[in-house]
Image (cartoon, rainbow, N blue to C red):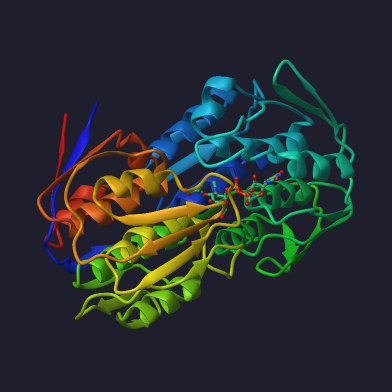
Length: 417
Ligand code: EPU
């Protein structure tokens, strides 16, 4: 099993190039199921979740071809096995994103029901409800979602809660339905806009992506495309938070500030100085951070995927902070681990109270999920002495070459087996 060893105390200084966004690339890969033609995706990050999704698509009959680093060509001309087996869905919940495209294109899908995971229960009832509204017949048997439809029909769908992959699944399904679909209370994440841009370039007729009402006029068929995946806003936010915590100075290339308003405003509140232009962000931090309160909520509010990283930042900040998690019911697993480094955190319900201390102390800790791992990396970078992080396969699911990128800006970090 691989571990990360981090010798804390080095301010991050230098340039990092941000990779393509995991949570944009995953639905875009699934969108290739919607067309007989070839889809080329550029700026695809090299991550475990991407590898898992490619294996799933291959297993269904699609061909995938890695053209060069970050460019993948996919062809789903023949879909022979519209099944997402338990073994794959349990390692990557985003596999649910094949449901909408499969039902829309070939009228059939068998997808293992995703169970709960480390951060919460995470049901998929909204995905199912939306497809049923479009005329799909869905039964749950033997732990599988079995969906069938001779032809999906456009519908007005009011989502009970804001769901990112739920919105993406239904938006993809609706591109090939007959007539108009309106998704109300849709998620507004930038990754949804990215998916809509790509689908529109494939011939779909989607308007309103990025607002809470998305309208999709179904078309007969979609065609191929060459599309560049947007930069990863959570990777960007993670490096900015690490630079703030270590009192460093970083230039992030291929980074889009406009997708990170809530995070940048909290980093400014913590004392960072930030400037940016259309595709880069520069951050400098000259003092100990001030503690910042925050509450996670759907975009454009503060992202749940940055909550754990801010917990690490607040643990060495001046003052006391309150962090409230409203999206997932169990996303404080990192608290126990941060406490091993001496962080002073108490949790009551969905709120954590973090009393900032001057200095964390290195310790052996364990990664429990992707963003929890990122928070432990940040804590390790600021802690005195050495921190060892175990179970880093979680990190490899969502951060491309994290130790290489951090080493290049002065962190003392290495992977050991
Ligand atoms: N929910 C339901 N029913 C549904 C769908 C969702 O009750 O049918 C609930 C969930 O249990 C959760 C809330 O709604 O409490 C929001 O979940 P959402 O569906 O928006 O999450 P997701 O689509 O499964 C995506 C990201 C997550 C990110 C969340 C929230 C992808 C592949 N995953 O998940 O990313 O945390 O949105 O922004 O886009 C990560 O990258 O580390 C990660 C977990």
